[in-house]
Image 1 (cartoon, rainbow, N blue to C red):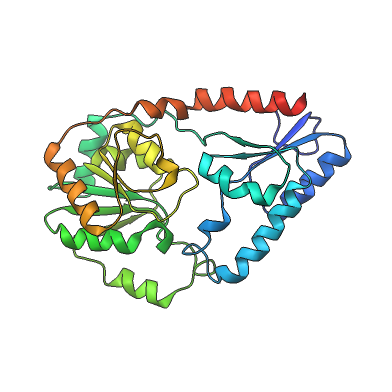
Image 2 (image 1 turned 45 degrees about the horizontal axis):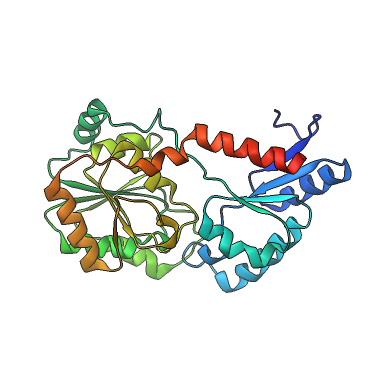
Length: 287
């Protein structure tokens, strides 16, 4: 295995779909090499994540169609992502392979819990969400639920992207008016500490190609409350909601229950399982 595109290889796996990916794919095909590309960013997820989605969306779809003409297979992290991309990729095979979660890293750890809660001065039940601070991730519903549950502390771990990518004075004003029981932690290099230090994981995102943060929280054993999205089909044991009252009721019930959860579906997303599945895809592409 190598990360040097100038080295000898049999198959090129592109993990990003930027302009240079098209160059690398074309160069590999001219050498007679097989090419696989992973697509995580779906066209349906642009609104609420980027400025001017009406302009970016058509350009992005055109780029995807052009790129997949230079590859032998596409990898996506979930079945709903596969369903969305089928009309765009034509006859190019699409394989579902999870992004995977490191089960050795994301584990229940009482010491991490004590350290995290001491660092941030947490002395009441705590609700956590992890992700970029953008409308797509459900920040505004996060605020509304926090207002409905003022007795709990709400934490958001994740950065606000550059305004070059998402510019919205209205959204910035919403962030400034956040409820008093909401704290933004910014980027945290060790999110496993935040999962351990909180009591419920709440993911109100309006769309996901997989929901990696939900998997990480599940691996730690947190009670989970998520928006009812197709990507979570088959994820037994998580609580789903469709609006603020349902989210608030599920969070309150989870906090009053106070139990560590166990989610059998997490094993399907382990790095070992993902590695095995990738080998199967590579072997199929290489013939």
